[in-house]
Amino acid sequence: MAILVTGGAGYIGSHTCVELLNQGFDIVVIDNFSNSKPEALERVKQLSKRRFKSYSMNILDSCGLDRIFQEHEIEAVIHFAGLKSVGESAKMPLQYYHNNLNGTLHLCRMMEKHNVRKLVFSSSATVYGHSEICPIKEHFPLTATNPYGRTKLMTEEVLRDLYQADSRWSIALLRYFNPVGAHKSGRIGEDPNGIPNNLMPYITQVAIGRQEKLTIFGDSYNTKDGTGVRDYIHVVDLARGHIKALEKIRNSTGVDAYNLGTGKGYSVLEMVAAFEQASGRNIPFSIADNRPGDVAVCYASPAKAKEILDWEAQIDIQEMCEDAWRWQLQNPNGYENEDNLVTLHARSANVI
Ligand code: NAD
Ligand code: UDP
Image (cartoon, rainbow, N blue to C red):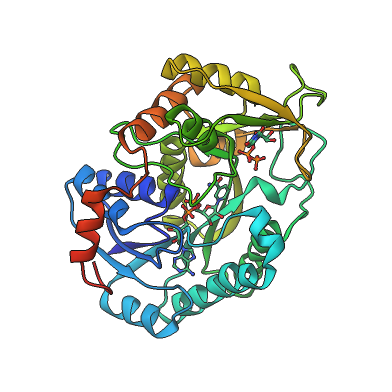
């Protein structure tokens, strides 16, 4: 029996694949590489010293998905595949609804057809909208403030309906806070396309010289130093949360949401200071206006995940920065270096 990982070449997916393989799970990966590189999967294989099948495929390809469920004995699915840029989603909402929502519908229909009803879904803290109260608990009101967030919220609702209609389903909705950091080896990490939107990859690109300076969006919030506060969680802690969720859904039925965060909030300036200490590099910055749509403070209550999944984040902010820096330093251009390009060209187009 294997775990199907959609979007397994992506940032969180690749780290979760390593953890799954290290824990002895067999995996099958599908990814259309719309926001990732096949090289990430090569490195997952190197790190875990294990082989697995991976397919260059869109989750909207029903025939392709059908074939995968026929060819492999799939026990459960961890579903990362999706588009994730808030700004982009406002510019091309149809693409986001099609990819994220239709993609998940296609996947669930195929799971049903092949009697696979165990699913871990990548949701997001964005489903809490602009919560005024922190720490945020799972029962807080849900709302969306942009099309990306709406795809997550709508998918959560679809998955709840699925369980209502058929109580054999077992579904974990994992609401991630702010994933940062990279695998200790420095071999896999976050490799955003173009100019990063998120704080940590922006900082690491300033440190390596790919960006000139950091722009801090607002310093007059009602927070300890005026800059925005978030719950940064190490991507390996997050990956381990998926193993715990998988163990839970393997042995039960139902649909439940869990916050995956540390429960601690750090400001932008605190992150800059922690990163400077970890890297020994200076991060020049300037202050600009607030970014539209940003909240002042957002951090999780991770109590439910601790109680029910027996999971809690272990890695502190210093290590998050050290690991993010190691990845950036060893891979100044992400997965795109000359050696990788040679490997890529040599590889077959469809199945790697
Ligand atoms: P990512 O972009 O690195 O990974 C997503 C992967 O899915 C990519 O490899 C991409 O190529 C693939 N993909 C996208 N659409 C696909 C499709 N139709 N068919 C096949 N593959 C497809 O993103 P990530 O940061 O690893 O995020 C993984 C999931 O977690 C996403 O669903 C994202 O919305 C969610 N999430 C991420 C964050 C974050 O800050 N990174 C926070 C909350 C939730
Ligand atoms: N931020 C910033 N400059 C950047 C990117 C982000 O000041 O270039 C701030 C942002 O305003 C927020 C925090 O850093 O307070 C985290 O932003 P990110 O986009 O990483 O996560 P999100 O806001 O989606 O939680």
